[in-house]
Amino acid sequence: MKCAIILAGGKGTRMKSEKPKVMCEVLFVPMIKYVLDAVREAGVKDICVITGYEHEVVEEYLASVDSNIKTALQSPQLGTGHAVMQARDFISSHQNDDILILNGDGPLMDSYTVNKAYNYHKSNNNGITLISAVVDDTHGIGHIKRDKNGTLLRIVEDKDATEDEKKIMEANSGTYWFKGSSLLYAIDNITNDNAQKEYYLTDALEILIHKGENKGAYIAENSEVILGANDRVQLRDLNSIMRRNINNAHMLDGIDIPCTDGVMIGKNVKIGNSTRILPNTIIIGDTEIGENCVIGPNTYIDNGTIGNDVILDNCKVLDSTVEDGVDCGPFVKVRANSVLKKGVHVGNFVEIKNSVVGEGTKSAHLTYIGDSDVGAGVNFGCGTVTCNYDGKNKSRCKIGDGAFIGCNTNLIAPVEVGDKAYIAAGSTITDDIPEDSLSIARAKQVNKEGWVKRKKPYKNQ
Ligand code: UD1
Ligand code: CA
Image 1 (tube, rainbow, N blue to C red):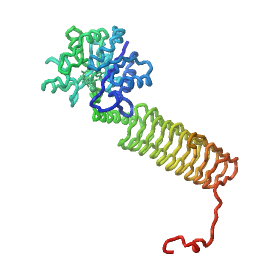
Image 2 (image 1 turned 180 degrees about the vertical axis):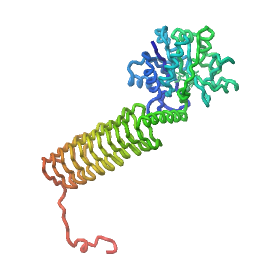
Image 3 (image 1 turned 90 degrees about the vertical axis):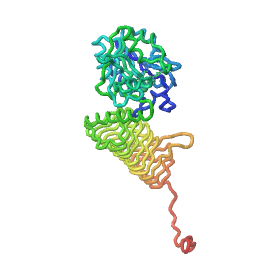
Image 4 (image 1 turned 90 degrees about the horizontal axis):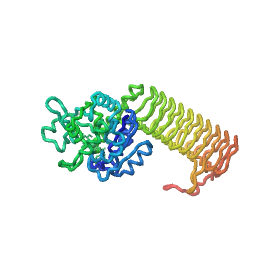
């Protein structure tokens, strides 16, 4: 059986964040989530996460994404070896299994690499297999020291390395496969006998070599998988790589992204064939987009369900459904819990919140539709406002099929507008309107002839 320990106890001082480092985000998702996904994808059943700094925050997040994850608390945090020591019970219960250890701050590690390393680990009957990569920049990482025949000797942390050791470009990823029994032996023998007075997990290699166990390094085919983030600049780099990987995968899948500038698409987003994504568009959460849509420029979608042939031009869509053929924008905000049914047209400066808008309804400009149930084929004149809040309570408006709402109408909720009712421009509607009726709710116009000549209200007149 495969099981895993993820190290997530560190504060991440260099991140200068209130959050524990593993909660810092890549494409709007905490780094540790990617590590968890890779581990699950690799077929790992039992997972123990080591928490420490701000452990409640990490534990709460873990519980929200996967209720089967175990945690072990590390307090205080005395290094990666010390972190693994906190999972002693977990390791004891998996002595005959293979245990994967990963850093919670390495979101690019993938199941492909983990599985390749596992196969190598098993076929060599290794006590420890580390994943390494040849990189251009070894600043702050562990160097893999080998003898002249290439046999592994030990891992030297950059801060403890001599000038010669610093030149070794094979880097430790912080991801390892251990035999359960070997890991147990290693953690019982790791000491803090080094300049930093930390318990280094990397010492496990030397310990197991002395014990006479088989060891090996699986060199990752794609060296980027080993990258982690210790500060905000590295976090930006991880965002760039993740963004490029996801965008490329979509393009190869038939999505049209003519320019990827500012295009950030989350890992769980699904997009249908021939949909076009324009610059400065952020699509995140569990968003699903159909085929032949044009999304962007400057559009933000979080947890949207978007149909086929939809246009979202400069729009924000949050936790809402937009059905086939809807045309929105520019400058439209669709707030949580809204449904725009087929063929709805929403034009500039319109906000929709917690409302259902029926098929083919048009709201072309400057309108607020909040807490409303709107039928099919309704026409909203420019400047219509559903007045859904009286200072204490929110109430709903109901608008029947085919109603015509004149420009600058206020609908004071709760109120019901019947099917095909016709509201005169400038009305403030406080009472229900029966179907097929005209409603005029505004002061009658008065013209006072000759008034200007008599009163002379203008300067220089
Ligand atoms: C570690 C490795 C280094 C490797 C690098 C890859 C050690 C000693 N060094 O260095 O060889 O090249 O990862 O990224 O292992 N953590 C705890 N408790 C602690 C300290 C850390 O849980 O007391 C967690 C952190 O939250 C983090 C992970 O362990 O998720 C790695 O810790 P970090 O301090 O970033 O190690 P590196 O210096 O990067
Ligand atoms: Ca690190």
